[in-house]
Length: 147
Image 1 (cartoon, rainbow, N blue to C red):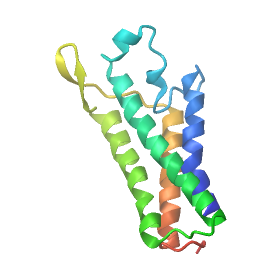
Image 2: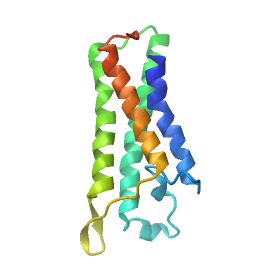
Image 3: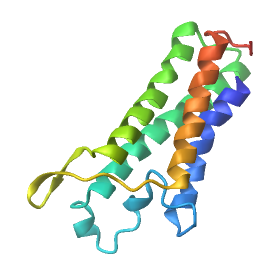
């Protein structure tokens, strides 16, 4: 379970690479902190996509930390709690595919705007790590030990 927890925790901290100008790109949340004028930031779809993905990465971070800390408290996560870890990763994948292909309806100056977000290596890495964590949960079949 430690390995699964690390795959859920790592994307949150790797996203910090996207806040600077790295060759990997901005990642899932890079547009949130790149706006020069905060008043205009609310008008760009990238800002809203970034907030949405930041919330999902925070959920995954909390879930991964719970997988690490609950056994230390001698509380073993039940099957339902282990199964619940697949939902944030599934939502992250679904929203990633939607935002990179068609875009989501985001409020803009002319009403709702459908604008796809750019694809970069960092965002692919973040989604891949989350999916790997979810697949390892599935491989465990809800048990606390590796298969």
